[in-house]
Image (tube, rainbow, N blue to C red; front, side, top):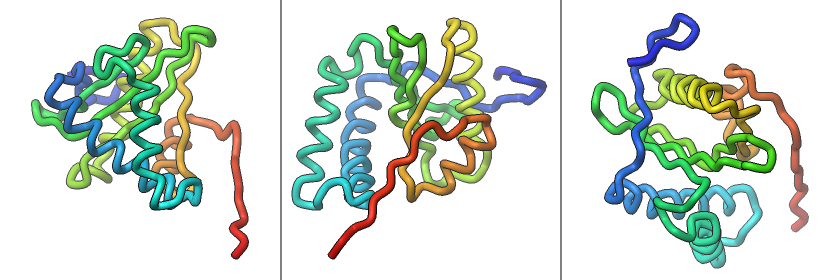
Length: 162
């Protein structure tokens, strides 16, 4: 257990195991493909292939890719989600590529607690900022990020034409 700003945190971040990485990667590729389809960025026909290529490019050495932090989010010893953070050495920022709380543990504050623990870790490592991308349709995540002090830095918009 860890305390941040007087709040008892019930979660811990553990380095992802090789077995957990394989399971996470397969799900993350599918989820990212669907997010890109929903955002009208990729077609359903190309999405899975492009998602696989993205993950291969960003994690060429898998779990052991330098500059990438892959965690299992645990609550009371039970895995409840995952977190992927890139370390941008040029800017000394963390970039959250993926944060996922399992469906049966959502809306219980675990996402916020995960961000608090990550912020503590970042401060200990003298990281200057934590950045992320959130899909426009993910209003729940946008609300959580705003509540946690994240500010909007860019907005991409599109108007589909039939």
